[in-house]
Image 1 (cartoon, protein in one colour):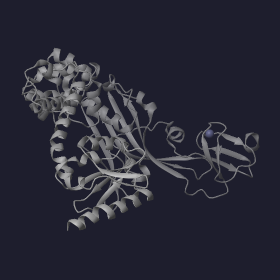
Image 2 (tube, protein in one colour):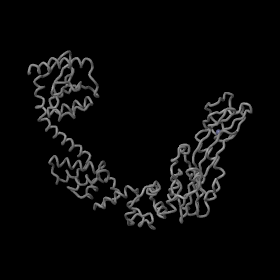
Image 3 (cartoon, helix red, strand yellow):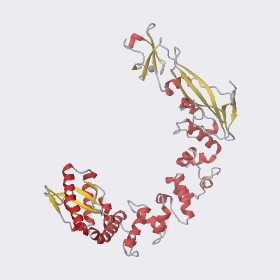
Image 4 (cartoon, protein in one colour):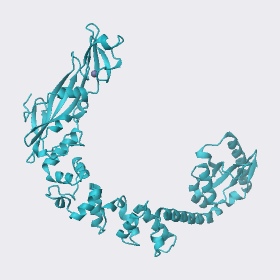
Length: 482
Ligand SMILES: [Zn+2]
C-alpha cells in the first residue's frame, strides 16, 4: 500500500458506525454447540436459551432482542463465505484552519466469529481558504497503484469499474461533521447529509467568500444550487459584497430575497434584456413561450401594465391572458373598452370568450353540416325490434352525444361538413331522446364504427339491428339509385 498524501487517523468508532448505520444486512450468528448468539448489527452476545427459543433455524428471519433489528439467522457451522457487503464512507478530521476529508472503500466481512470491517483509502481532500485539493488512488493499467492529484474538487459517483456496483453505497460519517477546521467555522453544515453535497459545499465555501455572505443574507437556495453544480452568469462568485455578488442595488436585493433562486434571477435579467421592467415577484409569468404571449398582450398595453393586472387575478398566467385577448379580437369585440381589455375576473371572462369562439365555429360548420348529409336524410328514420336509427341533425347534437356517451364524436363536425362521413344515432324506441349508440358511416355506405358509452362496442342486439338496417335501407337504396 502506497502512503496517502496526508497522514490522517481513521476514527476509531468508524467500524462500529459502519456496522450499526451503514450495513444493509444484519445477521444473528448462532452456535448450537457452544449455545452462543451474536448480532452483527449491535454486537450483542447472548447465551442462546436465555432469551431465544430453541427454534432458530439457518436462514430464518428473526429479530435481535437487543437492538430490535430484523436479522437473518446463520448457523455458525455452515459456511458463510458470501456474507460480505461493500460501500464507501466519507469522514473528516480538522487541524487548525484545515479540514481534511477521506473517502474509504469498506467491506464488511461476516465470515469470522465476529463481523469485521476492512478499509481501503480511495480519496483525500483538503479544504482551506487558500487551497482546495483532491487526491485519488488510481490503478495503473497493467499493475500498480499511485496517488494522483485531481483538479475537480468533487466526489464522483462510484462508476467506471466492472465491480463498481459493489461500492455504490456512499455514506457520510455524521459525527465527523464536528471535525471542521477554523476556515469552515461559519459554514452551516445542518441540512447537508450526504457525502457528495458536503464535498461540494466545503469546496465552494472555502473557495468563494460569496457563499458565506449569501448564506448569512438568507440566499440559501442559491447556495444549494451552486453546490449542486449549477452555474449562473448573473452571479459574481468572487464578489466581496452582496451588491457585487448579485450585481444589484440594496433595494433590488431586498426585493429579490423572498424569491431567491437562479431561475428567478435568469428570467429577471432576460426580461430586462427585452426592455421589460419586471419585478422579481412577477418572474413566474415568464414561463414557457412567454415572448410569444407577450407579443400578443403588448398589442394593447405595456408588459408592466399586463403584469400589474395579472398580479390582481386569482388565476392568471400570461398564456391565458394572451389567449383571451386573441379571442376577443377574433370575436370583433371593442379592444379599447377597458372592461374587455382588463376584465375583473380573467378566468371567467376567458371561459366566456372561448365558449363564444367555439359557438361561432359551430355555426359556420353547421351551414355545411346538413348539406353533407342530404343523401342520408333521404333515407329517414328506421325502426325495428324496439330500436331506431336516425341521422344527426346538427353540430350541437354531436356535442350532447359526446357528453352523454363520453366519446369523441364532437370532433367529427368538420368531417361531416366536408361530406367525408355521416353520423347517425342509434336509440331505443322507448327512449328516443337519450344517446345510446353512435354510428359513423362512410360516403360509400360502410360502417366505420358504432360505439356506445365510453367507446364500448355494439351488443349483439344492436349489431343485428344495424346490419339489417344497412342491408334493407342503405344498400337497397344505393342499388336502386344505380
Ligand atoms: Zn442486535
